Image 1 (cartoon, rainbow, N blue to C red):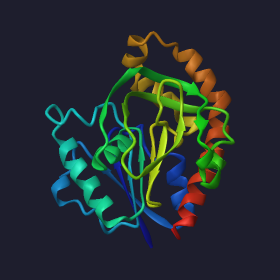
Image 2: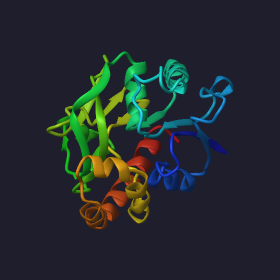
Image 3: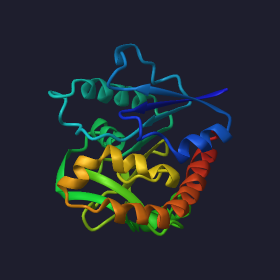
Image 4: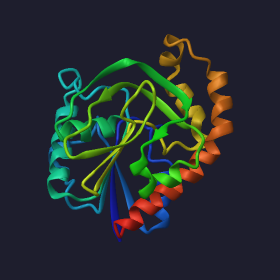
Length: 233
C-alpha cells in the first residue's frame, strides 16, 4: 500500500480534501503531530508522498519554537531525494526556505475568501482544475521569495507568490486549497483571537465559506488527484 506521511501543526488544519483523495487512491495516511513528535527519528525519505500542513508560527521563529529547525531539516532531506512533496501555508514556507528562499512577514495579513491570478504556465499543470473554483481560502501573514529553479504559478495583489512548483516533484500553496466546506467552523473557533484582532467578521467569513467552499473542495480534489496521477501515485 502507498504511504502518505502528513506533518500537522494544529488539529483543525488537516489535509482535508487531499486526505480524501489519498484514501480513494489507495494510500495509507499517517499524521504526525509535529509540535509533540520526536522528529529526530522521523523517516521522511521512505514515504511515497510527504505533506507539510499549515500553522500559526513562522519559519523564522525557531528560537521560540525549536521544532521548526528540525522540520526544516526534514524538508531538506525530502528535497534531496526529489520525491513528491506538497506544502500548504506554513508547509510551503518551510519548503521554500529549504530551497533557499527568504521567508518573513508580508505587507499585511491576507485572511478570507479571495480569488487568485494564475500564471500562464499554470494552464499546463493540474492547477487548471483548481482554477475552476472562483475563490480560495487565505489565512497568512508571511510571504516568501521564489526559490531558484522554481516556477511561480499564482499570485494575489497582496501576495505575489501564492503557488509554486519545483522540478516536477514539489508543489507549494501559500493559500488553502484543502479546506473542507463542512468543517470551516473549526477554523473560525481555532482562529477566534486573530479574527478579533484583525477586525474581521466571523459571520461574513462563514457565509463566504458556504458560498465558495463546496466549489473549492470539488476543484481542489480534482487538482490533487491529477497531480498525484501524473506522478504515478
